[in-house]
Length: 278
Length: 278
Image (cartoon, rainbow over all chains, first blue to last red):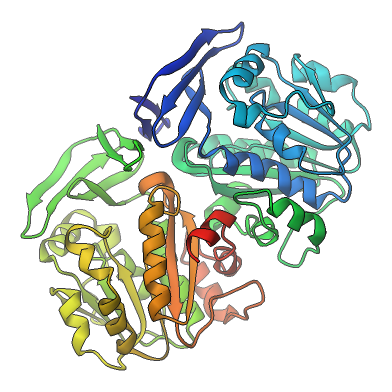
């Protein structure tokens, strides 16, 4: 049995099938195991990264909300996300000319390519450039380069820790072109309240417009997840926002969750989430 | 450790503290135990019913969506829901003159009154009439009586099974006044796909307007839950629906989740939920 507990003494349990891979990189321990209901499961240091059966919640939402809100995203940066799920969704957008993937741990990419083909399937696409580097250094040299930056990181501990600082986000901001949008995963507003609150306090120091959006992600701590829409020039979507319906409808056809109504609905967050993210 | 698995081999685990109550009624086994992160936990036949810390997701959503969509709900029926959480939320509405609670298992009411005071706190309100009866029989004699009927049942097995039939819903429909709304809990669209699909097939046979709405409920199977908005005369809310903003705002002040934007947003469901509920 695999169990990941939140600090509050509850969490998800999964009946563990065959272990397909178990190994250690310079940064962390990796494991891929089979399960009946969630397909293959990928963990880092024992913490849930993704599963074949519920990965679409996370990957569709981190990608299509900023990508469709932006008018014409051509150049995209994905930080973390070595499993390739975020890249796969980004490449559904025909406007995209280039995606940089900056993943600190090359072993994550290798293992996911081998064992999670439905997730990593687009990592070899010619539009993708892979940098096995520390994003904290990588981002320092980038000025006025990206339309959309997606921060598909682990929790703020271990290798992901440095991605939750003001300096890092200031550099991310400088890397944006005019009208650029940044979306980091922003923890669970229920299962990781303190960490969620900290992330928003930090983001509000750096960006003019910051708005949480939420969705279930079945296998993440407490099953309820969030992302932060951040931009200086672009406002977060609301019910009245006019989306490019043609593009939204093209993407919707390729998705299990995403549709243009959901695009606006995810920003209508519960009262307690609004309070915690102030 | 308490663990509730979905049929697919994953589920929630909770570190079990002190068991406060354990007993058996004519219908089922009841247990109340303490936990660090979720407060007191209430199970029936080992299945999660509610916890002190996440009950608000379920109770606010089963109640305020139909109650605020209805123009003037005065007479309300709650089926199941012996823990009292649904009753507590119904009584936040000043329009309400009477609430009938029809719960088959009197022991559920007694145990929740004793051990879950924050949930059961309004069961003794003078507006509440409690019927310890089988709802299948209770509803047969009711014609043109209720404005809103809330079906706060267990899964379609054990004592809850008879609440998932066409005959039962036909009787519920007859019990409604003009403009009446029915909302049953409708299982998890992710963790209980088959059961979710069946419920919607059944409801669409009986009611003209049937729409799923979804939210996380942290401790329910897969953590992602649904309810069905059912009515012959009233349409399910959409972004354009004009709500009574004065009432919505009054209720919002008393809630952890509910607000008038969320009221509309919960109906913007993922593509796979739309498909499964057709």
